[in-house]
Amino acid sequence: MSATLAPACRPANYRSAVKPIWCPGCGDYHVLMAFTRAFAELGVRPEQVAVVSGIGCSSRIPAYTNCYGFHGVHGRSLAVAAGLKIVRPDLMVVVASGDGDGYSIGGNHFLHACRRNVDLTYVVMDNRIYGMTKGQPSPTTEPDFDTALVPGGTGMRPFHPLVIALASGANFVARAFSGNPAETAGIIVEAVRHPGFSFVEVLSPCVTYRPDQRAWKDRVHRAPVDATDDAARAARRVMTDDGFNLGVLYRGNRPPYAPPTGKAITDLAELEREFEI
Amino acid sequence: MSADAPRASSLVDLYAIAYQIEADAVERYTMLSDQMEMHNNPALVDVFRDLARAEGIHRDEICRMAGDFDVAAHARKVARWQIGDSPESADLGAAHYLMTPQDALRMALAAEQAAVGFFRELLADARDPEVRRFAAELVEEEVRHVTLCQRLLQRYLPPAGGRPVRDPDPPASQA
Image: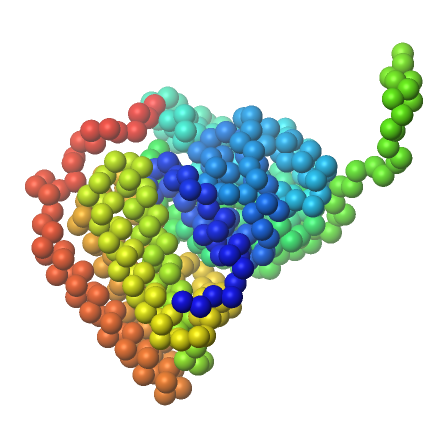
């Protein structure tokens, strides 16, 4: 068999030897495929990529790649990732999260990561449930999702991550479906290439606690219009769509965060004077 | 053909597309085999491993037919599906840790049938005589696979009572 591609440019070369323990049928398997395909497409070597995550089913993903990985504290993946990107701008930083980790515990970090616009890509696998902790409602769970834990549903309006991202300053916003790994990989590639904070919401079914989400594959469809560079227009569109529009929805043009370039203090005495009260 | 499916304007394009279809099938069946291993369903580990092995033989055969041509590299350029995946990819979303060999064979049958449909459309679309000849061979081969799956399905009788009605190790949902 002939092959001239560099080994690292094949998706399989980004996989670690660790076998995923997600439930069979879980959408996160497809997202893992999309990650490795995207990395291969981008032509980066594993050691040029850092995959950062928080806690939850989706956050197991760094262990399943052979890139640099940081499986961090619940909800704090964006803080770690932003710090990493600022001190190691040469790394491609991709952050993996879920709707519980990213929007509840990590909700505040989400807002400020969008606002700060550090050049990283945030992929949230949204299954509208806390899967790892056995099925509690998350910030994106429908208000009438009825369980013994929440009889009659929470009654609360779900969090709208795409609108929040747009309002907070994310520079690239897209929605994908895990069951379309090729398309998802393409969107991740575009998100990585776009400067600044790129947010990709991936609808990723939880077949164990939300078997109804198996039907998502029949509901998703391509967004009928092209992406806009007008955040207000993009927000209006996503607020009025059916939640299953896929594709790149917004491409902004804000310059990414750049750390101050002032002269670094290297003299200890001078540094101590700065902290004198 | 659906607008998002790749087109074969030459024989090497068709080699690349056929290669990618088989390679994707190998990837899916290997993943399913790993999933079943992690979820302690040993019968299914073997079934999916065998399916992966069979698809791998076809993938390697296409490479052999392509000779020195780098079919894998060419596949990355021309064998892309814009929506969904290549037709012979098993549906990972349909997997369940209690699935039976019957379920696996039904999954494989659906994938083989999709491949037949894809190559038939490609054949109907093709103008180049070499592409038509090879596309016709691929249709025949995939039809043989469909027949094999159907035969195996008859041999693997469903377990008495089908899939256990009561999951002995259900998700401990708070629902």
